[in-house]
Length: 121
Image 1 (tube, rainbow, N blue to C red):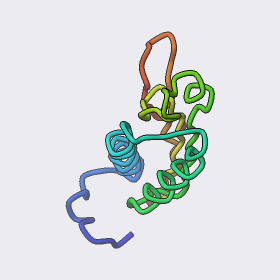
Image 2: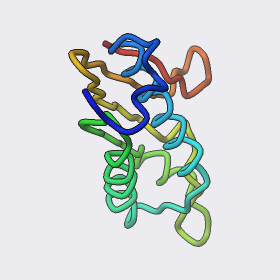
Image 3: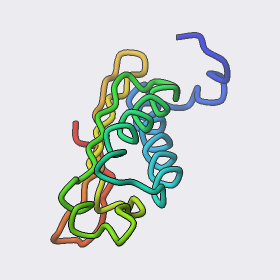
């Protein structure tokens, strides 16, 4: 694969590079979008905006985003919206670099009480 900046990653395997790109993209997603106002009426649009923007990142082949509507319903204030938090997000990124294809996942894990990012496959 010949792409801009490739020489800076020549010490990485295709799998390591895919993991790197997935991690960068997942971190960007989390830190860009948490805090965004969201309501039951805007959740679909926000999921789409998150997905389409992250697909622009290098090596990202597919993005699945789900915002927990029940959490919005339970926590929306008098004005009908809440700020997006990590525990509302369930995300799966498909990342491909060279011959490697991986799945990076973020989901809230109750036993950790934390929105964990990890390599699913």
